[in-house]
Image 1 (spheres, rainbow, N blue to C red):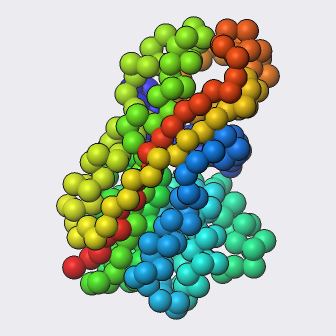
Image 2: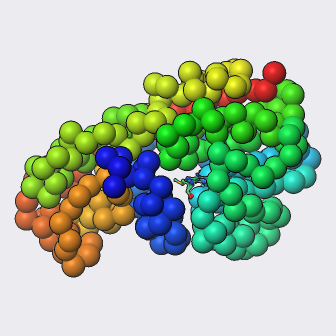
Length: 271
Ligand SMILES: C[S@@+](CC[C@H](N)C(=O)[O-])C[C@H]1O[C@@H](n2cnc3c(N)ncnc32)[C@H](O)[C@@H]1O
């Protein structure tokens, strides 16, 4: 396995995203813990709304479970919306969620390094929380730029290198993973500090936002739900989140367990 699980193709295209459950549970645990920070999908919509009109053609690259896709559909009313991801299981979830919300969009199963889409076909694109899965994120930015028409816009979103560092300390203090705090950040290939330079390789950067998100895990059960679904840690096999929660309860100080992450957005355009 690569030192960084987010850059390990076997894990990214296997355990991490080959079903909907793991991403859904990790997202739910984080959402329930959040006490400060705007909804990232809504920030993306607000950025795009200034630069697009209803009836546009839009792409959601690395769409995951379609959280941003659904907001684009409802908030920006595109004429055509294409959600792209390498996981067919997650694309099934996107289709189900779009149908449940009575929204229209199509899905394409593809590697974002080689988008099977024509040149200049889109007015706008989003790549949220996914380019850190590439060792060459500038190559994905080049693909996104190729698919945008001249003047088309893209929003790229990522997190800071030190995201959730407080949890590394807790996992280490609980003696669950002695190297947790010294292992590379999951976001090392594409993060708040290199976002602008990487975006600028193929796009013009119009605006950049950095927003701090603050989280508080209410108790050991809540924390275990997050830790059991993030690939960062090498926690010895236990019976599942309930056993992990019991260990955390025994070894950690009293809850809540706070942590932070900076979420960074680049609004860009194809010249
Ligand atoms: C955290 S999820 C994205 C969440 C989503 N964009 C959102 O805003 O809710 C990361 C996604 O990147 C996708 N991904 C990772 N490597 C990829 C690749 N090479 N090509 C396409 N998608 C990829 C994964 O399958 C996963 O769905």
